[in-house]
Length: 280
Image (tube, rainbow, N blue to C red):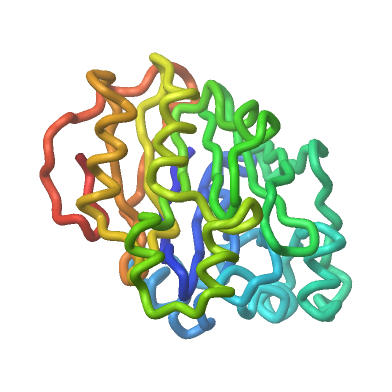
């Protein structure tokens, strides 16, 4: 199993997860699509993929930087799309040509050999969900767009080989920004977005010997910077051999391979890329 972010930030979010369909062929799933179809096609082309290679779509919630053209894309490709009932309502009850499937907290979804378990998070959307995805021994948790850390979210983030975790903002940068007061309150509130400090605390709580990759996602371009986020990440993992990555708005991050059969190769501990898609 492998995954990569195609885009991550306040403007647009999209993540690819690729496993096996159970018959030896790739099973590529798109998690959120805040990109336009043209942008999505261009970023897929950079990986040697096409729109028709996507076999399923999952939408975490109805905010435009996540839902985008997801339902139209599912209809045009003739592929199933999952979201919560609340997300579907919040998106305006879009027509997916009979391909929409209801996703519920704790109810697994089978995507070939992969099993995805949605779980609820506190965010200012109708019925937001995040995902824990497994194939064999490989386990990945996608955890963004939550205002505070809950025991429920912690339980799903535990024992993973990889995390895509929200590091949205620095509180002082947010307060100094030109954002209107209501937006500052929303972002910093209990149904908003995780600060660097809150995300680092979560990371420290779920840190274990099998964790090999952490991708920081949903960084605010106005109220955060990759260097600060990396400092928080380093502080959280200490001496553990964990590869740290930053997913950016423009490039996302490169493919990260997870070993479905056993232990991962030891992670590097030194910077060898720029913050755009950086690994540390």
